Image (tube, rainbow, N blue to C red; front, top):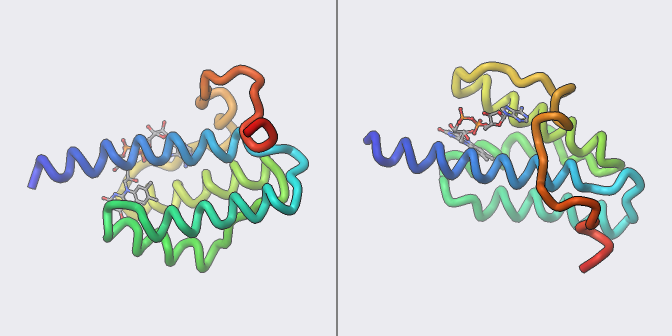
Length: 117
Ligand code: FAD
């Protein structure tokens, strides 16, 4: 059903954008609490993501490739590679993870998410 496919794709684009920006704003030197929070976020996200088929598949990926939370770099590259696994499964092109920084801009200049709540 075309309408459903369009909505599912739009949901996916929005979700990926938030997820990538979240890892790209993650600290270079996260505290244990930062690390726990990011890990939990992905597991909760995978439980609650509205597309059930996508959620089930993402849960499997998380089991096989647990979130890497030791730094901004490891977290953002980890997520990029997971997104590439989803791309592959859906027949979409591979994304060059070296272009993450130039591709994504959160528009939130300088304010750090994890320490300034
Ligand atoms: P998207 O994959 O949405 O990507 C959006 C943009 O992000 C791209 O245009 C590109 O600029 C950039 N990008 C692409 N790859 C990467 C990468 N590796 N790292 C960083 N940036 C990148 N759809 C299904 O039909 N079945 C599923 O099982 C399914 N599972 C999903 C699981 C999750 C967790 C999420 C968030 C989405 C899932 N989707 C699934 C949706 C699917 O991944 C796409 O979001 C949707 O099909 C729209 O694709 P798109 O071509 O617009 O690009």
